[in-house]
Image 1: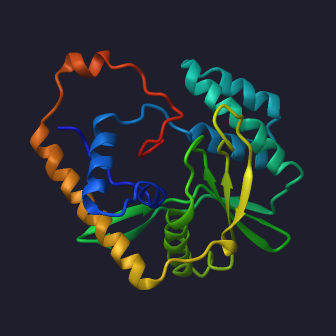
Image 2: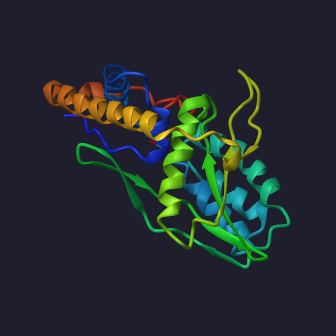
Length: 240
């Protein structure tokens, strides 16, 4: 049986739809064709440049060692934007944050794992990296994400005063290169409590519908799994 992994808070928001059945279809499709690459090297690159002072050219060389060309080029398209954004930033401290969980409903707990926080001149910064090339969080999905993150941050006295911003590395249009848009979370309207409850109930229902659907499908034959082409890293996926 294909594995239906529990999505993160960010992926919950991105894959939310207006009814549970549509959510289930999205989750089933993603479980049957999961991503086979990660943006984790970019988080390591941020740490290397910001904390360890590793020269940019050396960071680039590390990314160039990645064997898959499509993945390598995808990461290299983001790296200059990261460099420019953090140019001149000298953090007083930098740390990773322990994973937390948000209760969606029906026992479903989705993980929330901030990549890092850092402090400069007494101000705490909490950047959230959005590396999707296309279809970044927007409108009600973005409001849902920011609302859920707010609730998590408010539970931690060390984080509630942090300046929360979203670093969106998407393309502004088809066939256009990536650009960085910095979104101040304070400018994003929050989802009201009643609406949030409806949205989360729909997601939980869709998740368990997807789980039941996949349980009835069984595993695809090995030949089908082995001969599928590698997925395009720029396409929307659950955990890319």
